[in-house]
Length: 271
Length: 271
Image 1 (spheres, rainbow over the protein chains, first blue to last red):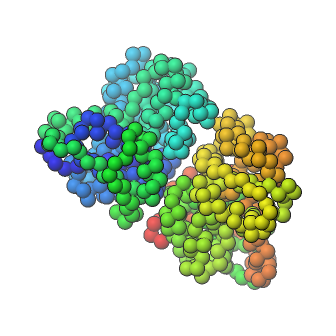
Image 2: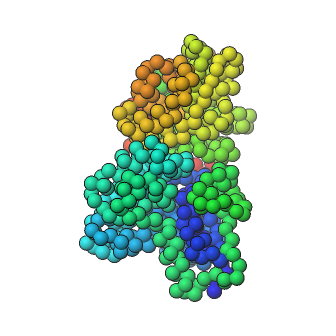
Image 3: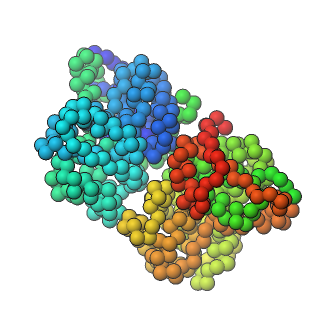
């Protein structure tokens, strides 16, 4: 048993898709979430900047003495995890390894596609992880830099012409490639699941890295006997680096439920 | 005569559209540009955050003792100018007043439309300025939050289906409204001039606030006899808050010429 919270952070709201899964899998677990809404997006910034922001995000979450920190951000997991993990005592879990393991298990034709931010795709993090699980897998990776802005603007409906046009523009190469598994390599992208499924006529298995990471966290806690006691309902505390009202407005979309409890703004630049 | 530089800042690259005009109008004038590429975009953040970032941008530019600072950012001009100008000794020039004056002079049917970021549109800054010049003008304002991301991703071509779909989505109301003048109320938007003209079949006069502000700066310097001496070619020094290589790649698109001279990265959070 371990009463401490889990820390989760993301560049913005996307990481709440992982929080949603954690709350289903670990309903008794306290969670502290930090969304860097004052500096979102990470995926178009340089690696140096993403590493600096990631260090600040971790230093803030460490003030809660968490049992582990889930980096629920495809970009931070891809470009900053290796650079920061040796400097941090708290165990850090990224989203790349769990999603890649599941993708390698699910593909039948050995063709896996990856979509993500520019930084994530440039890092080749998913290709490296997939090769580690099964070196025979063929991959195709496509950067989709406008998916984060459309999702943060609440445009996710499969009938929205902007959504349809962008999806066709970004994913046509993957359709030609013939992948049977697609890793949605950014925690914002699961909100486009319906629209992406529609584009592929449901013929491609979509992997949600936030959900896979949440399952991996559940396994780790169970394996190390560090689960929360089963007596009380877990608490969710949210912190952001911009005004809280914008966060509250969109958070329910990502959590697929009303955001309960208080959201507080912090000065992330002071960490 | 005044040998000092002009300071110009923007949330990112958009302000270079104003720099381009300044260099045409004032070829002997030294210019120091700061693009807050580590924290772009401003237009979807809260007013408090935009004001805090604007203060830091101004404090950085003031280290060069500029003769004036041009806030070449529609969002900062709209939500932060009034809040910061009394605390700053350097004269601050925003983009809202010059663009609104020109729009009020150019409209024939008295219908002016404004497009901008969410913060700019919520502030009603352009409507207030237009009413100050001509209270009979009818206005329609539409937030176009995805225009900055598409421009920063280099997607500006009028034949790009994503550009066409977004323009039709955002501007259809303005077409119905029947405006004959449209203020491109964000310094990124002039890069969409061809595509917007195409949508309106050239029937709407587009106002470029960066260019209007540059003309106003020329007038002010001439009026106060603070122009640079006509002997040497003006220098352009660029500073950014993220890695310089991303900046250099896109800057030539905004300047419509190669970026000459050195670009340096600074730590804006320390100002």
